[in-house]
Length: 395
Image 1: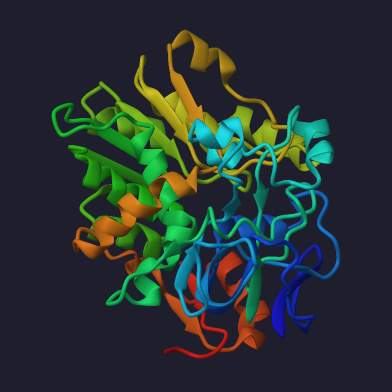
Image 2: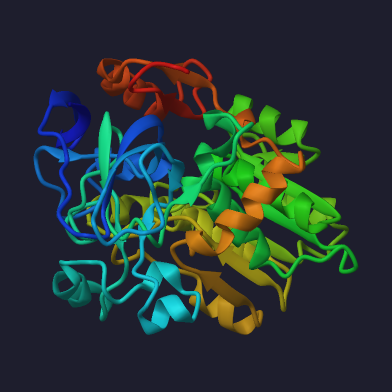
C-alpha cells in the first residue's frame, strides 16, 4: 500500500509499504477513506519530536471502512464506517475508567521508555514516534487499529467523511480546551485564544457552542484571522499589534476570563528585548519555545484559567511561572481524552450545530502529493489551513 513516511528531519515521502495485518484479537483493519495532516505532524516533520525512525508511517487523523476484524472484537463488523481517535486506549485500566483516556496505562508497548521522560507511561498514539508506541499512522491506504473495540466510533448514514473526520483529533481537542475554561452561558465569559490554526479554529467554535459571551483570537496569518472572524470573533494580529496592550484595551482593563494556548512548541516571537535575548539563547539549545504560553499567562486576568492544548514534547524554555503563581491562575492541559467526546460531538454535528469541514482548505485524492502538501501547510502557502487526503479517491 501507499503511505506517507518520515525519512529524516524535513523530509516526508510517499512510499510503498507492507499492508497491515491483524496482530491481536481486538484489532481491526480499516480501508482509509479520509485522513488529514495535523499541525502536530509538523513537529515531526521539523524534527522536534524524539524517537522518530526512518520509514515511520505518519498520521493520526483517520477514518475509513472496516475490512477485517480480530476474533475477539465483537463490537465492529466488516463494512462499518468508523472514525478512529488518535489516542489508543484499553478502556479497562484505572485511567480509562476515570475518563483519562489519554493517560491509558496499558496501550504503549514502549511505556518504560516514555516513563524515563514523563515519569509514567501514557496512552499509545498513532503515527507519533516510538516513545508513544511506534504505531503506524493513518496517512496510508490501510490502517491497523489496536483496541478497536474501545476507540473507534461508528458513523451513521447521512454524514460525509469531511463532516466527521475531525472527531479523530482536532474537534475534540478544541472542545476539551474550551471546556477547560469553565464556560457557561450564565458566566458570560470572555476567552482569548492564541493560535488560529485548525485546533484554534475548533476551540473558537467550541467556546461559542458552550456559551462564551466573547472570543478574541490571536494570530498573524491573514487567512486564519479571516476564518476566525467568520465565526464571530474579534481578532488581534500580533504581527502589527502588541498583544497585551490590545487585550487590556479591548477588555477595558479587566482581561480575558480564560485563555487557550493552541500553538505549542513551534511558537515564536520577540515582542520585548527579554524575548529577543531568550530567543537567541533558545535557538542554541534543544529547549522548546513557550512564547505563546508566556503571552497567554501574561494576558489572562488574575484568578483566571490557562487552558493549554498546544503540544510540547520535552524540556521547556523559561516559563513565567512567577506570573502563574502570583496571579492565582489555574493551568489545565493534557493530550485530549478523545473517546470522552466522540458521541457528544457526533450528536452536535448531526444536529447541525457545527460542520467541522469548514476548516478544510486543500484536498487530494493522491498520497503522492503528500510531501508537497506537507511543505505547503508548514510554510502557510496558498492559504493552506487544513489538508485532507482521500487515499482511495473521493466517494
